[in-house]
Structure formats: structure tokens, C-alpha cells
Image (cartoon, rainbow, N blue to C red; front, side):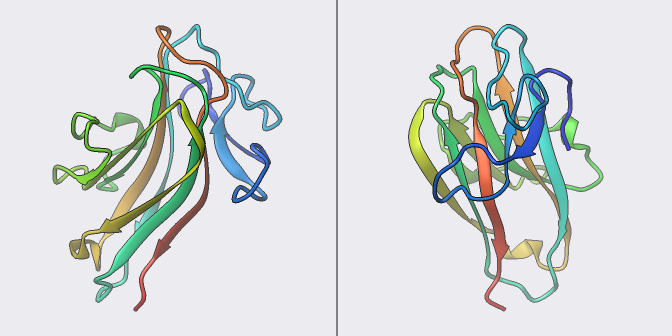
Length: 168
């Protein structure tokens, strides 16, 4: 599920409170679901991903998820959601865009770019319309989290209620 030993993603019941319910995903400096904190002393980029196949004919495809990142930062600590071709591994993802346009389409190898910045108060909902060209294809949905030593306070990002829907 996660790359790297420093601040790996875990699945657990934190944070608590609606709309987060049951299990969610978040980095943990101790690799323990009861610990929603990260080690600010060692930089890292960690991720979790899943390959998704969209049936042919699905032309309206919507990705939604809830996230929260209450820790404070300045550019150094952030999370991303991106799409990649399945032949490319999760750990070799490339930054697609400059981060100033939070949810937009980018290059062929990274169709979607959604960046969330730590320090955002409360639970946020991302709702992203995916391109109809994904119908009949398989892509890799990747959630990543980056921390560095220059800025950031606990807790890290948390992601829950990931949904990929099409009315067809």
C-alpha cells in the first residue's frame, strides 16, 4: 500500500468525525493505525494506489473523496491525487503541473492533478470530472503525500470515502 519506511500510509479509524467513518487512510510515523502523526525530521514521499478499469461506454465519470490536512505548512507538506498509466509504478510519479491550479487535467501520463495543501481547516470534498477518454481503459489512481523538514505540523493528511461513479 505504501512506499518508504518513514511516515507510511496506514488504514485505521482516525480521524474520527463525520464524514470520516470506519476506516480511512493517513500517514503514520510509527506505522500504527492508532498514530495519526508524521516525523517532521525526515523528508518523504509516500503513496497508495489502485488500478481501475472503466467499462466502455462510460462517458460521465466522477471521482470524489474527502480529505483533511489540518497541520500547518508552506509548500513543503502536501498531498496529491493523480492518474497514471498502469505500466508506470506508483513510486515514480511525476509532478504534473505547478500546484497553483488545484484540480485540473495535465499531461498524457498524468491525466488528473489535484493538490491539497496542509493547513486547511475542516473536512474538504474533492469532486473531479474525469475525461470520457478513460472509458474502456485501465488507469492507476494514486494518492501521494509529501513532507519535508522545512515546514509542517501534525497531524498529516487523511483521505476517506473515495468513490468513482458513472451514471451509466
